[in-house]
Image 1 (cartoon, helix red, strand yellow):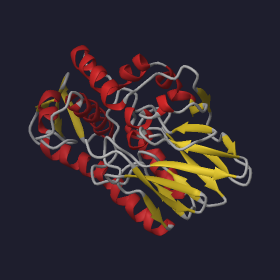
Image 2 (cartoon, one colour):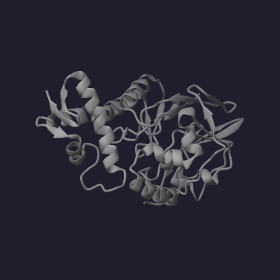
Image 3 (cartoon, one colour):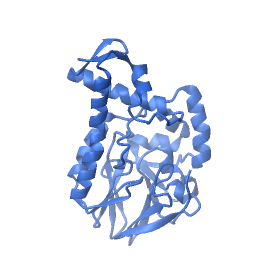
Image 4 (cartoon, one colour):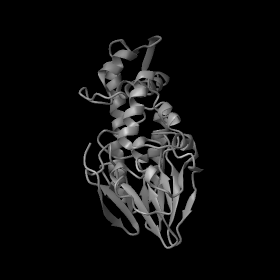
Length: 296
């Protein structure tokens, strides 16, 4: 799984709590925003479980296990976008959001709770897009960036000009929209929104950490967005011959063939369904019969 622990990297009064393994899953890079009137901890990751910094409040960018790992060790009030609130308050709702079949859901329930030490936070509070955490001489404003989950959100910290974009992580793996509560088109709109924000620093939860400068960020964001384009193109090519959804899932357009985990087939299917629906709407692909597709 990697190594626990973190090191602080400062960007003004925003501190990236960089995970010892660089922020690769199941770990991640949390944030600490320190103002004259309070401190906000963002996305307490597995790297923090043995060393959680003090904070007056917590903001969770979205309801996924790797962003909730250290919540059991944090007594401060927890905040999350209202669309993901139920999943933070109730672990059954969290697991339902993955959309797994019953047997794999049960397997995931055990492994997730054990690995990430998850505990429900029924005391969590829902906040809307634009909610402002007033930290005195610093503010952190919620920026709703749905697609990854319904409530996935970032934070814009001022006056630093630090935009935290959570799991819009700029990695080569590309955008993840494979849960029951995910949305490809929502993710694309969120990418467009991120590209319009003028900031000095752009922070991600996973490996990339922090990118400095809007021009550099937009270049990386464009490469990240291109993964969606390549998935479309690869699917169109694969469907030169008639294929069923099961054949598309087996082809693996998201994960590499060697990856084995309870969620892989569900994610492949959910991702493929969204791409296929759009390609059919565009007239690029036709559904020959229920569940069987071919490129036009």
